[in-house]
Image 1 (spheres, rainbow, N blue to C red):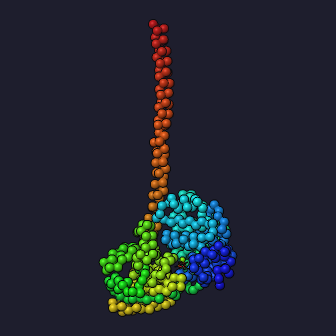
Image 2: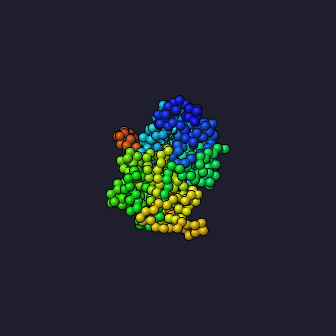
Length: 471
Ligand SMILES: Nc1ncnc2c1ncn2[C@@H]1O[C@H](COP(=O)(O)OP(=O)(O)OP(=O)(O)O)[C@@H](O)[C@H]1O
Ligand SMILES: [Mg+2]
């Protein structure tokens, strides 16, 4: 099949040809016609197979090169970096069109985002927190939204985001098209998704728990204390050209940057405790090849598209089982091949059990000099490891909630600041025009004084007259 056969406008076909795409990927072949029919959709396809274009191309086509005062398509994503990346994709595919795409995300100044929105916005790409913030301030109107897209839908509908999504959905017209895309879709989340969708079509290019076939997966069993040295040995190999290393915690990521530095390996970290500027800087330097090793928490596990990543390392196993598929999917994108190496110590065997159960596949072992023999957890034994896993899961959840709480607090503080700014605005006005107020007040007081002075005079005059007559 060709892009021409998908009935896309010439402007769009020209833009994708310029991007170097020769033919649609399977998810694009299936999702584009259904979206153009106006159907609601749950679409699952492996990482790196072009889901972004699968929703962006039909959206641009349906908006028909006609710019209107309010946005007509809304895309929500879980992370800021992904929102920016999707914005860039819309710009690339819509380069020969008059439509405007605007991106709202946290951690950045409000002014430029609002400025861009006010200059014109047909497609709005946003992270939920910042969008709600602008909605509360009455800056953005969603009343004309015709197409609502959730990228990384299973993540958007889990505990961390579902409340925000509900608030946004409440502001979008009932009569809309809703589409959801992800590489993974647990059954319980799919059931939840149906609340928001209307008679949806479901596309599954592969089972919803399939990792990219282009990634060669390996696992090393080793002592926890040996992870650093084994990792640094891998990183020094010639075939490891560009690699991303996932850790479970933000502190773990920072420590690893420091420890690898001592072993002569330069790296940068990206996680939720970094400023937005630091996050984007690390990602850009990694993208451009300026640094070859990026250390990340799961904030970078979903959707991020950086070509030519040769290796993904799981320094810690992910607590959220689906994260494994997303993490290793940062390699082997758009038909390239890549490798993933997971470093697994004894206390993580329970997590490994969950991952292998999800994929219905055992990850092949890669032996190193420091390998130890660890028996895989068997079905009956899973309980023994359950407690550690449950604790790890709870702490990850807490982390996410405390982050949400922090964001909420920040939002409140900002609103308070805005209110006090209003006050200072009045104070400034008073300072500038205060003399007029003061003059007016003085004149008024003088008038009152004169008036009462006159009265007193009149009264004393009357008294004197009275005395004179009496005498
Ligand atoms: N038809 C195509 N031909 C060639 N390359 C393509 C095509 N469609 C998309 N690509 C490229 O494939 C890469 C991966 O695309 P994209 O980021 O949309 O994947 P994805 O399916 O959303 O992955 P993830 O699940 O990780 O988010 C991008 O670099 C994109 O430019
Ligand atoms: Mg994607």
